[in-house]
Length: 127
View 1 (cartoon, rainbow, N blue to C red):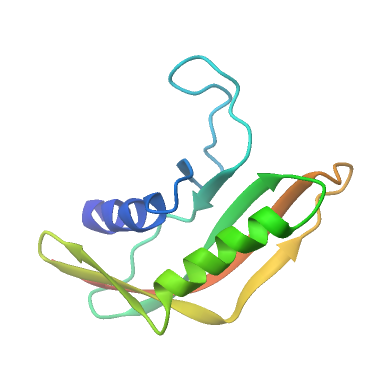
View 2 (view 1 turned 180 degrees about the vertical axis):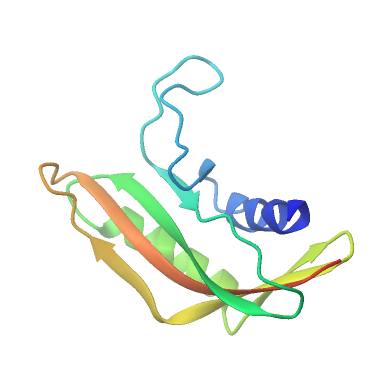
């Protein structure tokens, strides 16, 4: 499982935003500052060897419009392409876009908080 988590962190870390496990965004960063969007949260899971499973990531921004978050989602989509291989110590993790790759989720009570839900398929070919 460690290799899969490291691979997901490496992949999503390429986009210049902090990465957090889903439902584990800290209130304060390492410098004691309040954590605010933009950031990415990732579901941490590991499929069986050579199996594939759905996972998701969410991109969070605070903005009046969808321009910045859409640009980041486009960047992630381009990096995945038809499938992205992320090397690990003993193999690789593959990410694919799900059939409905991106859905924007409204945040009730906060029109400036934007969330893009990314539907992914992951295959872990590691020991």
